[in-house]
Image (cartoon, rainbow, N blue to C red):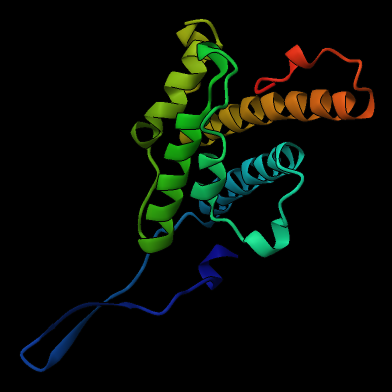
Length: 172
């Protein structure tokens, strides 16, 4: 089916009154889609966490960029081992590269900050850290989302029952 997915050629060069065209070949639509899905699901978790932290904001009117949302987490503290914010920022920079260069291919080396996060989270056990880009993305997305899911659940419990220790909340 992927052979049916042809895109128009790109302009490669304009010189001396003529245009050279460049056909786009070998795009891995599945990898691109998976990467973007990982980015989107992490953003959804960030959104829900931020809505709990800053409930007074009109989120629909704010229309914050991903970078703005991450900036709101400047005081985010969960300990060095599970601090995924710099890796999330890097993931977003890769998404920006991908959105501005259709032929950008994500390699394992591009995911080094995610790999470093996984190494810390897995307590230095490098054998648990995957080598392939899709697997790195999968592990990172799962761990980042688990972190935020726990924070969201804990914060929701505190809001529902103010007697719950607020010390369990990283900013409170």
